[in-house]
Amino acid sequence: MKLIIAIVQDKDAGKLVMELSKRNFRTTKLASTGGFLGGGNTTLLIGVEESKISEVTDIIKETCHSRKKVTTPVIPIGVAGDSYIPLPTEVNIGGATMFVVDVEHFEKI
Ligand code: 2BA
Image (spheres, protein in one colour):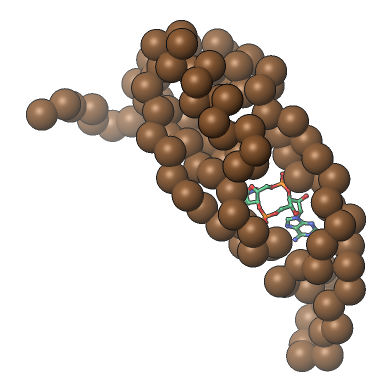
């Protein structure tokens, strides 16, 4: 079994959970915060058999859109030291950021 950890934008999260449930995938939705922008995003935990990973990936690709955002990051880009002056920057926020990890043991009690 594998655990897919998918970080998606809040705007896409509701539809993604709905599409996954329609196809019988179970999800856990966590409220999360991006370290760079300091804004809210959503982290989904999706436990699946290895053979289902490509199906879940396709659903994520169809549902989650990348968007541009002009923002002042909480962490400076490429600047070291304490002379950082925050400036508005345009960033391209995914899509989705996906991690697939091995599940050593799975049990429902
Ligand atoms: P944030 O950390 O708030 O990052 C939002 C967007 O800002 C990123 O979009 C990227 O376009 C830009 N960005 C992030 N760090 C940057 C940096 N050091 N320099 C320049 N631009 C930077 P995404 O890459 O689509 O990431 C969306 C969210 O997914 C992130 O929100 C974070 O919560 C998560 N994420 C992305 N990569 C990750 C990773 N390797 N590990 C853990 N979480 C990750």
